[in-house]
Image (cartoon, rainbow, N blue to C red; front, top):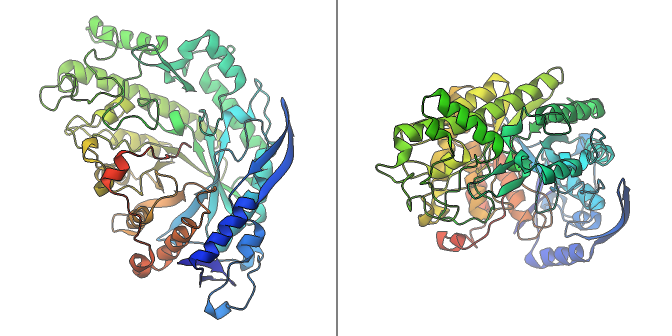
Length: 536
């Protein structure tokens, strides 16, 4: 098994046997970090166990035969590995979601420092940092950026680039809530959240129906988001365009432009999700839209014959392949309105971000999901409930790509690691076909694309698929972010695969021979797994 290490100014390859990797794992398991963290509203001692490589673990790696007897030492940035650029595509790695905790303290700081050095030695261009609304603005209008600034300084010291994801949503794992003051408003006014047909609220982000409603202490969510962006811009201005080269603007659940049609990432493969149009404000807008079209009865709610979360979309009438309501006049009316509301939300947020950072030398981007389950069905039901009016006879992504292009924003497409032959048959899924459709829409509208993997720390065939998407004849990605740094990322099972993936991007001809072939998942094994997806 081979691991890429840096012996001088270029990427060298050394060999580490399984015994050495096991010894490394023991070192990582015994490396316990204890530190005090103090922050407003939270005074605690964190005893944090992490499985990431210590400095001594990284330094213990041997260089290749040409440098076999030379110790591996950290060089200054100018003497480290040449950055990995594939056909103009830069390679980044995402930092942990909870790099800064909900108490606004830095988690596993020494481990992150060691990890950053390892990535620099591999020749990775930069890292991605999630910045959470609920962490930075725990009190209305009062921002605390100190921990995030410390991370930026850490990245700068290694001469790495940084892409910041501004997250206006919450995370359940790890637990990173919305701002406390927002959640308190939500307790008395649940209409600020997305709501499904049974009345259940989705409380991890605000409904797009309140974008222009002064529901947050007399301010609209868009006004609050704008204030947040302006505070970030002011506080991080010394790094903009140098260390910080790009910003991703959160657009909805998990940061993506979509409705929360699936409430859990482990939702049944059978289900296509539910429409999310039942909060007070969304229903009011639907009612007005129906009356304006002369059909007031169409504005009473979503489709009555749409399935539940865990039902097959073919179990009821709306999505059935032939003669479903999605194809009739009412279906077109509702789906056009539902998708247009999502598109309008994206337009408002991207317009606000573009105007805020118009004079900053950073790229802007937003993420759209790869909703590939049931994509072989004519109605594409999972995409419809998520807000993309994309069917066998209709392009649902052209308008989205055009919107991003209009504001000179890049589109982040996940799923570069997914292949059709690894999808369970019952999911009716074709991620490769759908990704190609989305990429084609971006090419048509001259929208710059960035890529990501969908599953955390993928298996061997995932790396093959990522390389195919990054280096194939139809490759369009400007930047690829591999998700995500952490214990699993630096494990002896995964880290060698990642380093071979990096080498393969520079030496494509050797990729097939280098990647391990054991432990390939079959569709049968995947169908029973609850797979870890990326959420920021």
